[in-house]
Structures are given as C-alpha cells and as structure tokens.
Length: 375
Image (cartoon, rainbow, N blue to C red; front, side, top):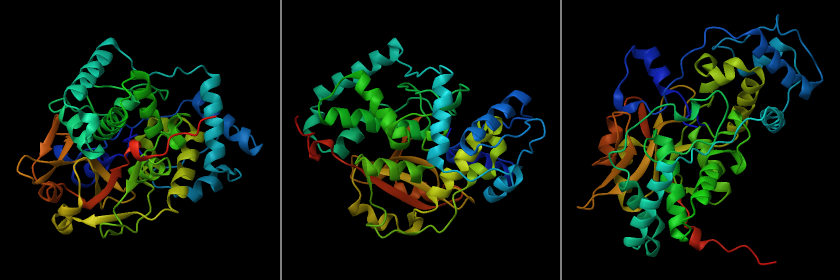
C-alpha cells in the first residue's frame, strides 16, 4: 500500500534505528506524529464503525491502540464485529462524498502548459512510433532536474486527486510518467484523460474513494494495476525469490499517519487491507543478482527497491534507464534533491541502506490490448 500513496514511511523506520536520515533512501517519509485525537474525531470513527457493525460505543472512553498493537488486538479492544476491507471502504467513501469533499486534480494553468509542452515534444520525437518502454524513458528524461518533494498527497486533511508536473516524490514520478506515456502510445493528448489515468493507477480498482482506497504499499500498487493490464509483475520470471514477510508497517506505526490516528474507521480499513495483501506472495531479485538480469530488462521497466525494514515491502521506485553507452541505470525522483539518473542500477541499489534487492514491473503497451467492442 502506498503512503507512497502518503506512501509507506521508511524515514520513520530508519530514524528509529539510527537517529539519522540518509538522503538517498528516504522514499517514503513519515508524517509528523499527532499528539492526541480530539473527541469529535473519535466520535466520527465510532460512527463509521457503527454503520457496519450495528454497535455503538462512547467515544470518550474508547481506547486508542498503540503503535505496537497487533491488528487482531484492535478488534478485541474495541469489541467490534470483524468487517471486510471492501465494507469499510464503502462506508468511508459514503462519508467522504456526503461531506462534499472536493475532488481536486490540481489542473493549474502552469501544469496544463507543461503538459502541452510534453505533448509537443512527444510529437516532434515521433514517440508514438516507439515501443512503450522507450516512450517511458523519453518522457521520464523530460523531467530531469525537476525537484523532489515529500508528502505531496497528504498536504490536505481530505483525500484529493493530486496531479503535478513540476515536483515529485518517487511514486508520483512513476505514476505521472506512466500515465503520460500510455496516452502518448495511443496518441491521446487530452489533459483530462491523463488525469483519469493517474486516478486509475493510484487507487484500488481505479477509483478514488478516500484515503484507504489509495494503493499505499507498492506491492499492492503493482497487483492492482496488473489486474487492469496497466503493468505486469515480471519479478518471478526474472528468477525472483520470495520475500516472506508480513506487510503491516502502517498499522504498526499508526501514530505516523494522521489520517489513521484521527479516524478509527480508516485505521480499521488499513488493517483489513493489510490482511488482504498477506494473501499475495511478494518476490524480489537479490541485489547481488541484479547485474545478471540486465539482458532481460528493458528501458522503462518499473523498479522498486525491496527492503528488510520490518513490515515494509519497498522503499523507493523509478525506471530502468538505458544510458548512451548501453549500460542500465535508474531514473528516479531522488530524495537527495531532484529527478536524476543513477548510472548503474545494481551499484545504486547496493548503496541504499536496508535494501535487499528489487521488484520489477513492466508497462503493458495499450496498443496491444483489444479495443472495446462496438455496440
């Protein structure tokens, strides 16, 4: 799940271990911990849970689980019936839209102008005639030097469809480049369609229904986009080995996520989402084997940095980049400052603290997908 998403918080984990932050590995920055939850917010969380369970509780006496609580303990503490992630999501969505939460696509004039320049560049370079991976690399190249910015999806208290073309975190960079590239491949240069593709890639089943619908863990991002034939997870094909870990970083670090800390139902939703994610096997290519698969990688392949941080799958992401001399590197929104190219992929991964290897997904060419049947 992505609090990438915010996405998942590596900064919090590393700070806990080292009391230091290494600039080039902080792909998923933690949000400031919230000291207390006000009475009104507790009541809202209890109301949402009551809609699903038929039970009510006094918000003034409800215990808040600690960061170290196990997900199963939460249900015992609050004496609520277990409910599915999809049910929680439905209630959260109803509440969000009933509160007239604005859907925001950040369609600022300057972003529309930037989009127009990218479209012009794509036409001039005849990008629609190229393979999808080459389109991805060319579009990504267009953003070199754009600044890195953390927490862009969580500036507002409500979930909004944020789109930006002038600054990125690592996942926002991947989503933006992929959405533009898929449009270029089919010569769809409409800005609103680009925004729609961002939504489809970022949220469960392609629809924004509140904070919990965001694909916070990147393994979930890959799985959900694979279902809709946007990308294909090729890690196993490349000889990947099982990661064998439980992904529960968000629920175990609840205080780092204001959206969960303030809303009991959102926390329950994330716990259920993590339980669903546990049913999916996650594979990775160990760091010392990355160079051996260079011949099987293509420009534009999505690379995620697998980690040994407890409860977390990956900490950073970018695209395979073919340098002028043919060597494979990584183009990414680097926490060290901007969109840049690391010359050698394996060497870069080996220098990332807590990294154990990579997960690889490949964009599926929309031109190779069957067209919708005409009515």
